Structure formats: C-alpha cells, structure tokens
Image (cartoon, rainbow, N blue to C red; front, top):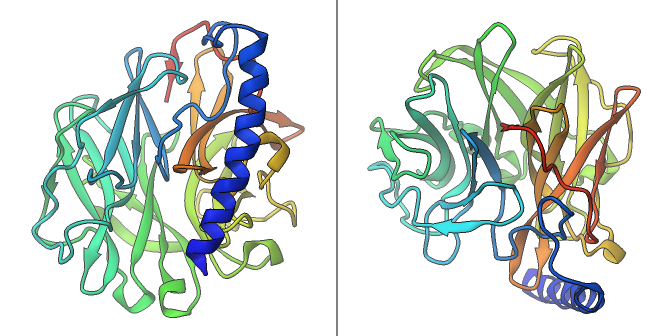
Length: 337
C-alpha cells in the first residue's frame, strides 16, 4: 500500500514539475543565486537535510541513499550543490544492521576545530542516536564510544537529533523517542550537552507531544530556533510517506518550556500547484544580513529532494516563503549557520 502511494506521489510531482520546468526553461536562462532560484535546490533523494556553514561554504547532510550511509553535499550559495563521498563510511561497532538505517544526521562544531555528527543507526531492534567526529566538515567522521549516545529502547528508540547553543554558550541536544514504532506516544526531548558535545549532562526533559489532528500519530524532527528572545520549536508530524506530512511549530519563553502551539494548522504543508508534497525534516540557516532560510525535504520523482524557502516573521509568527518559481535568493553578505 505504501509503495503504491509513493508511486502515485512521484507521478503527480513529476507531472507538476515537468509542466512548470518546461515553461521556466522557455522564459530564459537558469536562475543564479544573485537573480533567484527554483526549488528543489537538491533534486536527488536527500531526506532529512541538515545544513552547516563553515567559512563561506555550506555543507548539507542527509539520510542514507544510493549506497551511502550519510550523504554530504557542498555549496557556496545554498542553491548549487556538489555531492561529496560518504561522510560516515564506517558505522559504529554497536550497529547490528549495516545499511538502510543511518538516518537524520546533525553536524555541528562547538569549538570551530572538531566537527560532531549525531546520527541514527540500528541497535537491539530499534533506532538509536550515535555520535561521530571529524577534523573536517566533509568527513570522514569516525564513530565515538562503544554504544549509542541515546537509546530509549523502552520507548521505541531515539531518532532525529538536533543541536542548539543558547545565548550563554550552553549546548543542548534535542531528539524524538520513536514511540510510534511500538504503537506508543512520541515526545520531543531536550538535554544539556557537555562542552565538547560528546556526552550528556543532567536528565532529559520532555518538551512536546502530538495533540492536534493534522499531526496524525507522531511528531518528530525537532529544530530549536531563537527569535526576539523567544524559543521556537519547529517539528515535522504525521506519516513521512504521505502528503499529510507537514511542518509545525511551538513557542516558549523558556528553553525547557512549557511550549505552546499557536496554530492548529501546520506551518508548511503539501501544495501541489507549487510542486511541494510532504514537506518535513527541516533545518534553518541565517545570513549575516539578518535573513533566515529554511531547508526541508519534499517528495519528487526520485525520492525526497531538498527545498529552500525564506523564513519571515509577522508579529512573532513564522512564515515560510516556499515557491518552485524563481525567488530572490540571498546574494550579499556572509552566510551563517
């Protein structure tokens, strides 16, 4: 049933993209970062994108595909991307199933010298979060430790790690317990990290669970962002393999909550006329001119491609300006992750 649904999604998106791409090609040359861009910016299977800026270069990481454990691509403008070799060619020693379960990477640096990757892999029949390090952002990353960093086996496992550093320099890690794998509840968690990011401090705190109709049976993929002194917790919800998958958010004045969902509708959802189906797995990138941009995946003919949309704010309410058609892209200033 899922295979049939995905085939129908791929066919629908292929038709929409084919029609609009043809008309765009007739209008003029391919857009450039200074004149605009067209979505998707990565048009191959690149699920759960995470973006890190190093100097004037961006690195995007994604879930396993095409025989690669962790995909990594490089760009200087967020629009044109070059695929690089596997960022995690050797999985940890604790992994019990080699391929197909390396999901949702998060890469960051806490000191500007060592790069830390949080990734998902299979352990004791569930998905768990491991950690790996590298001297370079493209890798190869080397697994650290004899076991997972986080593995809530009694709650179905742990996936979708995301890092956050607060204004005082304190690092945190967010994730989701994979309760839907057991038919149970899913929560978004947060816990303080050690300064090097390789271990946890204190106890985890539950932040958010599903409680809205559009969220279906799960929420996942947390991304924590601070705007005007408030904490915005973006997340994805519903079944990733369906058009109902979408992006929502919640807000708090304190990092540990409580978080409130201001809307009972998703922030970003399927929009067939714009060639967007099942958006999710988001991350946010900031440019030094103050503009903010969200990357997220959406279904295309070859899987889940990476899209780019400007994140704007209207009286404290986030708005993602998604479009397949050329948009004004960030062209000046020094981009920052």
